[in-house]
Image 1 (cartoon, rainbow, N blue to C red):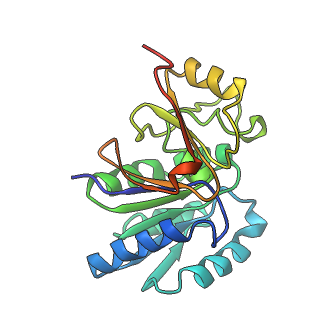
Image 2 (cartoon, rainbow, N blue to C red; image 1 turned 90 degrees about the vertical axis):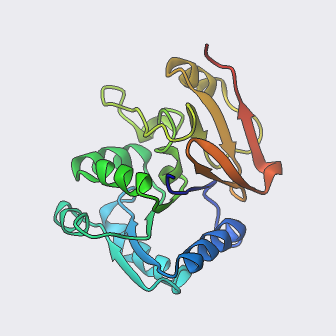
Length: 212
């Protein structure tokens, strides 16, 4: 059985409380909570503040290693973790940096071996079929913008209030993808390409049958 992928709409600690609590319970059930934290979607100057925030929010974790460079990615990818936590920021920077650091394969192996992954905002978008549903300044058209496609051929739009935009729908069709939208207080858990839990369903939107 593959691991669990926690997807958050990108809200603050209060908004994401339910999904965060579920994550903590899953780690307690495992009896181990070694974490690899990946804040590389942010500007490099923000890494230190991000680490301080993360430790303040997830102080129950028994250990936290943080990827801030190619060297740290190489060193930490030799280790095994219970949780990989991927934070928000610039979606393209995140996807391209993970590939440059060789962490895309590492994340895939982690999931396939039953590990837990948490993605918030940009960290959630990359698990969809395309990242071009992110704001247009967060990806480069000439780059490979395919996501990891762990969401049953859907692409994910966080911070969504209201309806999907025409651009969201056009990009989904261009990549033969369906759409999932999450408000900042909503979240999902995927396992084996299926949704296995939902948080605040009133804030979740879906648009299927966009391709044949």
